[in-house]
Length: 254
Image 1 (cartoon, helix red, strand yellow):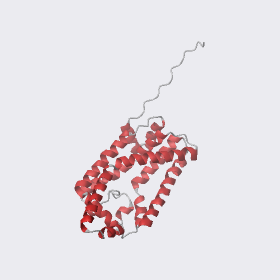
Image 2 (cartoon, rainbow, N blue to C red):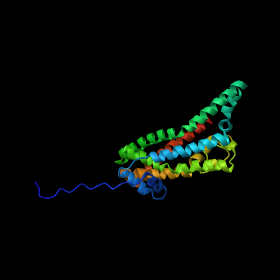
Image 3 (cartoon, rainbow, N blue to C red):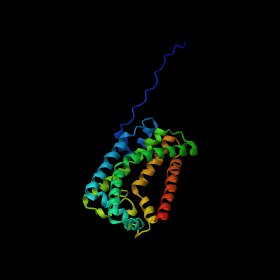
Image 4 (cartoon, one colour):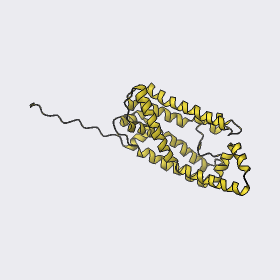
């Protein structure tokens, strides 16, 4: 046996708290993503924040706008759907609109769960892209955590939506899917005055979305150990592809 003393293994440095990761996402995102790379990949706090802020917007819409008004706003943007509804007998029409309002109400109440599912899917797609396409070494849990923290700028849009309703934004123009003026589409005349394809494209060009995409690209490259360009190519490549599909569907059904 060696006479040398066995050296104790180096202790892992404690990671950032989740509150620190949240604040650093806005002020020093590299610290957040480095912490995630080092194995501190919990993300329950960003999810909880989305639940709280999303529920706040949902409650504000419920009392300030009402869900029947949301249904009417959607019908004004889709003349073909409104025309089909007008052909239904009046009593049945009111029943259909009632259930549409209930459907809208609970769909948006469950929005955080849909965001969770979307982040899981996005993490799986980005994991495969960065590891197999660019030789990265990321783990699923790391990429999922990056997705949650990178998505935090979306809270700003939701908060602006809440404040806007209290400030007097017209209920007749409010859309839960685009609650704040962080994109060009918000300021355009809605369909059918503007083509649905163009409106969808302009709505996609959202400051908070692009901010989140940049953060996601940086975080993905960091946890995968690749060049930043690989993260940008993976994230923005998929976003552009999905955008083309979304605009194409809007054009086809408008």
